[in-house]
Image (cartoon, rainbow, N blue to C red):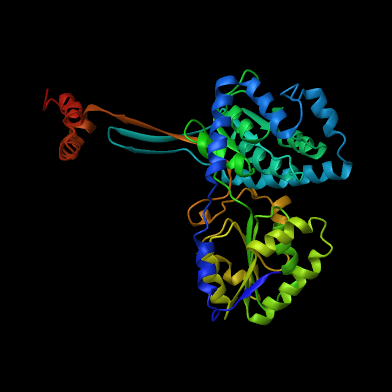
Length: 425
């Protein structure tokens, strides 16, 4: 049942504040267990990978890497319709991300040349879950931005690849596929094993163990983000169709029992109509057990007085997905300043963004949309600064550099300038 809260309810602000401060927290016992897994894989490599796969997944990891012929054979089992849809989605994702290529630049003045070089990462690892849902779309949404960036080698690891996932990997240009999962797969990507090459960066979603592992290895390897459960906040007024809004809430709720479906309703009547539709649609949803848990435990409908109040509440929440089911959605869209992705109008449902629109669906969660961005080409690139000075330029700026170094008490810094300008030794 979607809980409805009006501003006069005593726990309205408390519930809202708890969501604003939600962050991405992990149980201490998970972090402790993950540290043990990561350290063992780092020490023992393939042997530890096989041991943890047998222990946690009850399967024998005989071949850690999926051979290309077998990969292609399994991918061919995906239906023609699905493969065609993957190809169309890939084209749209590629077209969108080609527009966000980071650019090199240069600044010159007499005796000084400053420039920025942009280069792709050498090797990237993608983690694709293999649990309760086939996430072929996530392969496209992670691999294609990396490919557009120019990453030379893209490897994917997944504990249970479906034909559709493998077809997506072929379509997106993944180079190698490994069959490990969980925290042990993240450790293998971060540190390498006899079979799995070490990568420069890891991207892709996962459960609490995967998230904890990514957090632990960060610094030894880059990561895309610390992602929590999926979340959606939909602002709706009387112009919205309650059945459509309910369907969007449930589309995210069915991902995970920890998903966060939020309605921001302009008027209590809207909240009640949508809540009734959520209950009605849950009854026939194949993943209703998962979705019901999300709705019952995290779902909430906040009632607000008008669209302006709805937008203000959305910006406080900084959700992963924002839906604007408002009469003047297009005019209000730019007022949403904290969101991973904004879906504008009745027909821009979240599923469009999840599968086909073009922007990556890997988005900041847990309120991180206040400062973080969707996954993109820049995440798979790095910038390097180049600084060139001649003697005259250093002489012109030397006194100022020395003054700044000396005020910080760093005489060696000052001397490295003055010894060149003839004002020191």
